[in-house]
Length: 445
Image 1 (cartoon, rainbow, N blue to C red):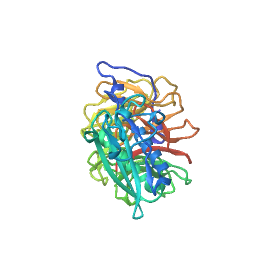
Image 2 (tube, rainbow, N blue to C red; image 1 turned 30 degrees about the horizontal axis):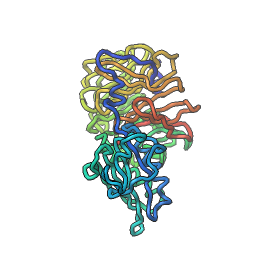
Image 3 (cartoon, rainbow, N blue to C red; image 1 turned 90 degrees about the vertical axis):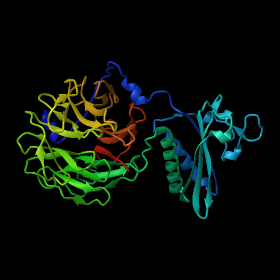
Image 4 (cartoon, one colour; image 1 turned 135 degrees about the vertical axis):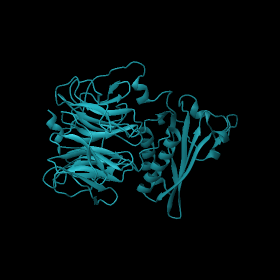
């Protein structure tokens, strides 16, 4: 029962429970409606051959952010503005009126336009966002940016990512996923090694070459360090890796048959983990180098997966019994133990949202043992929503730095692969194809 934690660390499933006062779906999907974006086709002077990848990337980044209602290009006017001087007052017959975009059939609140040019062997992109509801173009400009890249598809894609990032920051406040990375375990090289990739699945690279089994990585808040469990030294031990250099850093492992499921404190100065040093697996905290360790939990149960609240470092979640595994909360001094999940089925893989109020987790509620789905819960109200449904085993959810996306493991394609989705369960995208991939964590820039 609890033994599966030591090797597999599963996830969750269930239906929807609406709680007393707050509808969690309002939080997930956002309230007050979304800006309606009309993203025009950008053209280029000496760069037109690169505008296909640019336009596709810009639209994809904005759409996948979950912040906007993307208007169909089939409804756009036949001619699009490229420069601010192309816009006109409504009563002026020269140029393009913003009302062409806010009115029917487009119905956009904002229009995104611009152009690119080759300048001294460099691709230069000029991007604009205008409020289409304004009548005066001079008062309508919301955003202007100038971006540079190499004179090829890669340079065009780079400028698209950067322009999209600025738009997302302008509207969403928390920025895009640009520069963030996903770390995970893959067996594609013959052993279970740590790998990394961009937030969109590109640039997948092997990080470790331990020729053993590595599992359960945890990422520091600044994305600079990974702590993980490895069998490279026979019994499971914790290892810490610098994500920039790929070099291991000192970490003292106390004598135990198992030290596993490490997680950093928000400031990166402490690592919480599970250890069998006292007999059964209990929660332990130590310095970032493993020194000064002390036992935190003192319950007659197997306890693993400690996760510290990013907003309140005095609170952590963990997985424990007795009986079927459930998610619990306690103070980091071991006091105030409280079960968070309701005791049905098995629950695992808790992951704090950056707001410190919500969590994603895996659950078998309502399903046969071993069938897991992803859920999101408001920790205060205990209200939860099911995000995955009847598509294989779904486990190990982790939040993106933007708080709007999740990465998770699923075997819906036949074997374990990594997927992302928005926090309402939509826009599911498969990131990995080769080998078996699991245990993802999402690091900041």
